[in-house]
Amino acid sequence: MPRPNRRAERRLAILEAARDVAVHEGAEGTTLRAIATAAGMEPSAVLYYFDGLDELIRELVYAASDRFIETIHAAVAEAPTPAARLVAAIEAGSTGGLAGDESRILYEFWSLGLRDPLLNDADHALDRRQAAIYGEILDEGVAAGVFRPRLDVEGVAWALVALEDGLVMDILAGTKTREDVTALIRSVAESMLDASLS
Image: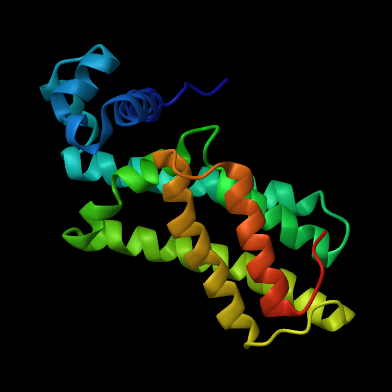
């Protein structure tokens, strides 16, 4: 029986501690000391597993991005038609990252990407992955004759991602409900696609 990889297990435990700190304390409170305390370690011990706070935060953001995309894929996979898949993608893209706090983590650290090219790359990669999901659904809908896009498919996909990015912030801030946001994005999608999503 192979021995468990203790280093990998410890890294995961530290990342989980970082996740808890980020969710409860925000980006400003996500310090090496706070993460170490949450993990039951000294800060110097954390540095045995990560090169520093920047690497830890990048790993945290990458993991949140992966979980968020998995949520969207799972929602879309259960839907039977292009229209139903589009609705599922809109709902999961707008609210799927809320239950597991992926959206909160991604938004908390978004501004750091303005100074950290690797975090900026992670944000762009997430946007591309979301746009690719939309693009595939839209292509299916166009081929089936249920979507008649008023823009090119790529433009519609990116517009939907941009809407999600902006409006999820309103959900997190408490200025819009999940229902308000998903209804608005569905309405814009219907207009851009000359299609009914009800």
